[in-house]
Length: 197
Image (cartoon, rainbow, N blue to C red; front, top):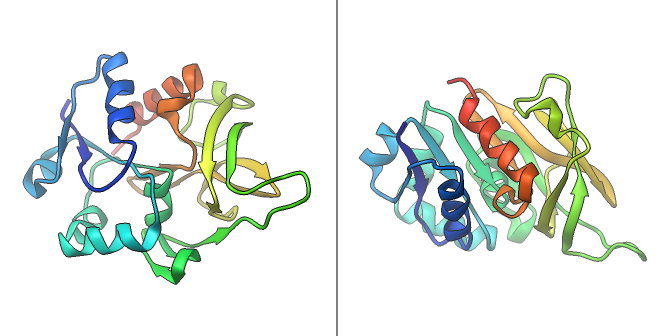
């Protein structure tokens, strides 16, 4: 099993790599197109701001590479948002794997933005996620969200219900951080490792 973590200006690559090491999963951190194409599975992590990150990916043609991948790909946090069509963060055009617009949370009196902390998952019946993860707590840090849609694999509510996980074809995505979500995060990563091509 060859797993590639896409190397770019994302802030959580090290955390993801540590989580994989704890699971005994071999991986490489790389921005080499051929290595990424030949990997059995690919993780596209992300922490940061949409426009700057998309510019970085476009300069290196990584946006085209990622969209063309045919093996299972897991987008995490900003990685999930950049797989969408557009983000309200600086009105950024993203990759368009998911035909969704990423929205900004509107703060409420009892709910601050960014959404930061532990919230439960409502796992869909046809989800790629292990059904045992239903009602599990996972860790979020984000100011933008993907609305609930036909591709939602799990839902969480914070000011509004939103997509905590999604899937389309060989693309899988989570808004939360499995690498910071303790036992539930392990279950998420294992679900991805079992996901079919």
